[in-house]
Length: 147
Image (cartoon, one colour):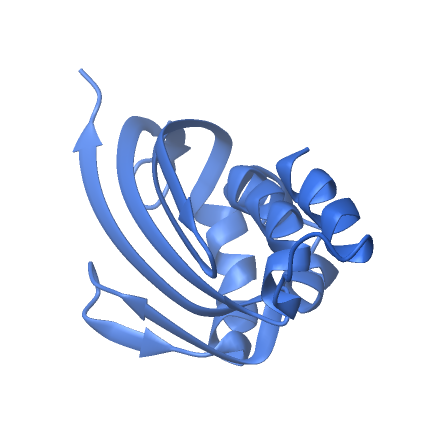
């Protein structure tokens, strides 16, 4: 709603907004939906909708830098590893073209146990937007097995 109000004020000439700011509200929605929607099987096309083609992604848990093609190639494995993923945003901060948020996720993890193990992920995300798409994504993951 804030983005819409600001866009109306921008169109009326009351304020000046950069292009990135015109789309920031939609990127926020992606931030909320990212793990449960964009990464769900069959929704791979959402990556092109929300991520810049020259995305730089740094996964601090793996100490590895990835790009959009790396992310796409990992999706089938992500789908196999995590089942019944539930997400809840815990903390959220947006400032111009940056979005930072902590998300708590619960998932059934099947990698080593055919019966599955309930795990909890505490994930810190930092997005940098450019032209309404995620240009840089840094992610820190803390994994805890539920008892």
